[in-house]
Image (cartoon, rainbow, N blue to C red; front, side, top):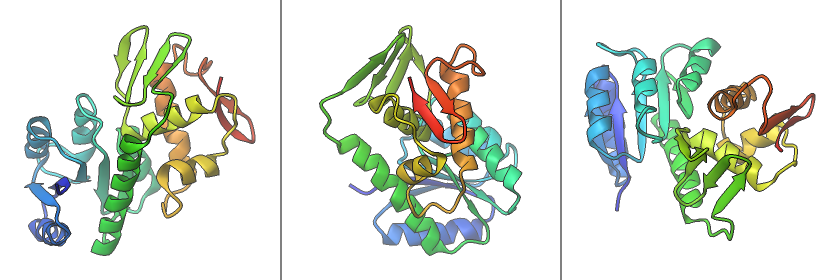
Length: 228
């Protein structure tokens, strides 16, 4: 069964081009042209990935992304016309998994989508004896891709979950930012290690009682991050 993609952009020619190209690869594509329509479709449908433009009428892409994160962990790739680093980091802060800067080559878009889907698919199909990992008050359900602290579910993005899962499965092993970037985002990811820092900070804000004094995800200064 083909993957289902939601493409959100107010430039109809861009949407048409992306839709045509993805459909050529057997994907099912829905389209939205403003933030409110995108949010409504994300609520009422199940998607494998969402391509979300930053500059949208009615509600910008950052706000749409943030609201989607309130009810879904679907991978979200932000499309931004600006090359400014702060725009990219702001997108990650709001729960995006990746970003692509306009103007882009459709082959790059397709390659990025397929890379994310491959990683997501591998996680779902991976056979591992440890299906549930527990540490103190935290429980990580590998099959359900859910995290609980004191039996309360913590809503993580796909990338946040993958980072936490890797660290929890390898306690006390220190991973450099470069290693995490390669293992979680892939060797072909064009971003830099600040992507890792943003996700670790956001993860701590969700799972740590005092993010500046973490109990779970620690920093080994000058080396990287580890789970204790």
